[in-house]
Image (cartoon, rainbow, N blue to C red):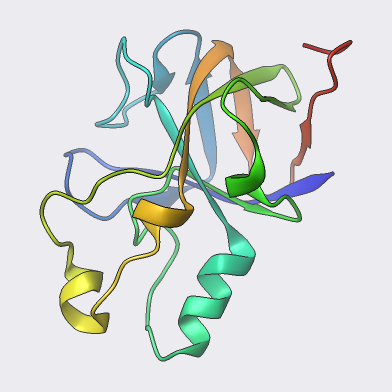
Length: 147
């Protein structure tokens, strides 16, 4: 079992995301008003709270959404989830489609710290079933019976 620590969106790709009070997840699209939403395999990005905190301990002064992540999750080792794994949060059902990504243009964090954790530690999902997600919600890895 994990916990949602933050939900974030951005108006433009390539920018830091801003935390919102609740995210409206739309089936086969992503989060309402997020620049990365659309009919593709990287509709919603997730990053581990523990990974972000470890990065902060090395001197990074960052806020939620700084890596371009949509959802920050505590208590689940996201990068160990294989592609095809499903996550549920209330009515929302997400399916992992990609682990990590190539960083084409170095973000502001990379320029300041010399590295960015999203390429190696972020995961990407598509929305199989929509709903509303907010900070504090429980998020779970589905078993075969649940998906």
